Length: 237
Image (cartoon, rainbow, N blue to C red):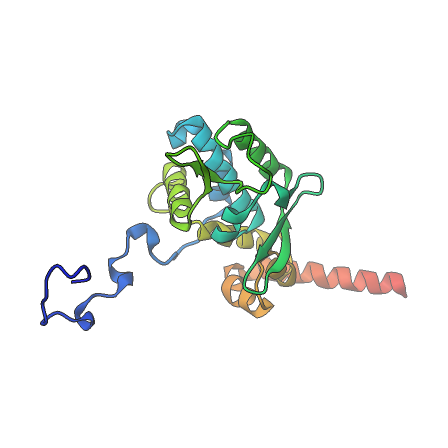
């Protein structure tokens, strides 16, 4: 019908099932959270588990590592260039959204090592300028282009499936959730996490991620914050 091959007036759009009901299993709403242990498995996986060429594996491992340790969005990771990465200070620069808002996310040593391994693999040509997409592929005509949204999601899904199994494999956004949940359980404030995630309001962060905290973790983190506050007040006094 869409292509105009046939004309069937008895069929209309109201009869079509919702896209959410016919989408691929890997694109379903993410109903569970990856654990810290899952993250460690993804970060320490070897190529033998992934089963793809060594340079492709190193690219995906670098992508996975930056998503878990930095909390970037799919679009933000695809937009990264070498100019955005500050190896000395351990931060990555992001410009996103209609307002061209900028922010910085963590780029720790583990992520730096993963990116360097990927760059040394030869998959990304050395002659590319620093403002070319960091992650990409070579086209049939020999040109370098950045990954598309669906391509990156597919690569992440394959990697997660190989390491964690099909039940836990999901889209790239799951790793952003993992970053936030680890930050919360480690006692980082919602305000700081909201800023690193690039949320327009801390309320959004709270609604999305605060439910991840167990009551005992929340109480412990809050207690530490209160104690630190009083200690600072005593020093000032």
